[in-house]
Length: 243
Image (cartoon, rainbow, N blue to C red):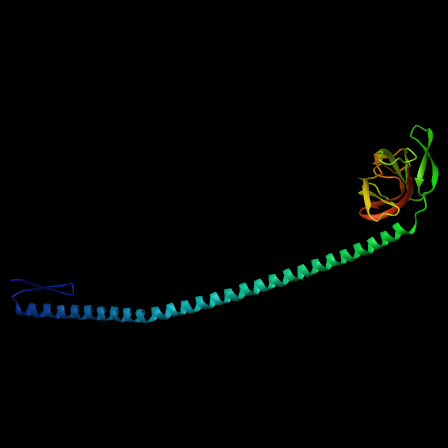
């Protein structure tokens, strides 16, 4: 006769023989003890893990919290640094702008002094040239023998747009630099812009000439001071009479 006992997953078979039954009981008890020890170890491990896990979580939270704080500190530091650099750059730009403004004021005052200083008509002279063909020619010039001069239809007629050729008799290289021609009438305060262009090699009337073609128009009769600006700086002046 067999008997089946299921306890903790163990199956024990009993027979009617007493000796065999005792041996089987001992084996069963050993298995039960081992199973109980295993369960206790698992319970202990679970308890330990249950205790350690919150500690780990607290540690992670602690580390994360400090990382967040550190990140915020770094962000604030970067913002302060950027703000400081921006302020410095703004300050430098303002300083440069201020210096440029002061320079422009000084330049304007110098220009005004030059404009107001002299109103004597520029001299007339004949400029001789030799063309590439070998032929010789001449031009009637109004202006400065060591600076700027113009040639064209004289006398200059008010409100009449005419072509005038500019000559430069100096030693400075002014090719391909922006040129602006302004004019101010004697007795008036405001200047007008009458032309803008450049001196360029292909405009030369002879191999040794530095020239710029232009069209000039003066709105009224009187004595006009023609102001030649190169790269925004006053370079020379010519005083002409407009009829």
